[in-house]
Length: 250
Image 1 (spheres, helix red, strand yellow):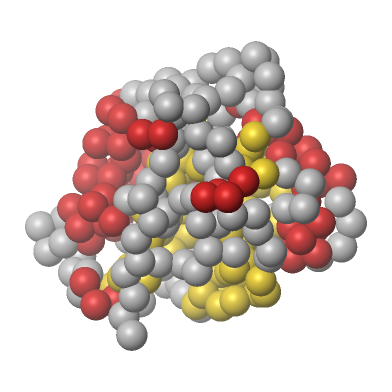
Image 2 (cartoon, helix red, strand yellow):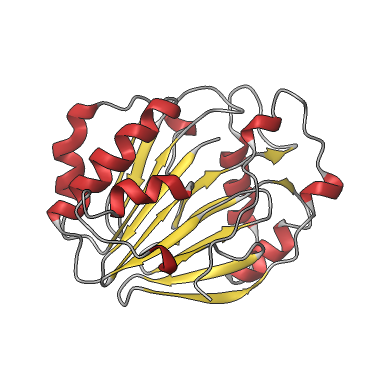
C-alpha cells in the first residue's frame, strides 16, 4: 500500500519541521514505496515517478512557510508507473492523494485512484454529497486527502485503512502508520509528541481541515461498505491491508 504524510502548522511550517518530515518520514517511507513521489501545499504541487534524496532542497523550499503539506509515496497496485498515475492527482480544482485500492476501477494504464477522482469530479453537490453518492457506486479501501483549491482541505478513510493524527504544540502531524510519527515527532526528531494526543480518524467520517487555524472537525458521515462482508481479498494481497487499530486521547 502507499503511504501518506501530513503536516499542518498554521503559523507556517518551520525549516526544522520540514527537514524532520523529509529525513525521518519521507526517506524511510520511500524505501518501502518506490513507484512515485509527490506532495502538495496550498499553492504548490510536485510529483515525480522517482524519489531522489537530492530533491531535499526543493522540498524544503516549497514546504517552509506553507500552512500545510501532504506527501504521497506510491506503491502501485493498478496502472503503470507513470507521471499521470503519480500522486498528487489533479482534475480541475480538485487535488487528491489516495492510499488504498478501488475495486473495479483502473486498468493497465490508468490507476484506480485516477479513475476514482475522475468519477468524483463528475458528481454534483458538496464534497460530502459527492462522496455519499460515489461510495454507493464503488467499493474498496480508502484513505485520502482531498483539496478543493484554494481553500478547503478534507480527509476521509474507511474501515479498511489506517491513519493517525498527532498534535504537537500548534501543529498537526499525520501518517499512514503510527510508527512513522514517533521518529518525526520525537524530541530527537525536533518536536515532542505526547502519545496521549494520538488520534485515529473515525472510519466513514469526512473531516474538514482548517489549515489556517490548525483545527480538524467533522464534515459529516458517509455510509460505507463493510470490507469484512463485501470485499474479496486475494491471498497475495492480504498482507497489504492494515489491521484496524485506534489511538484515542479520551
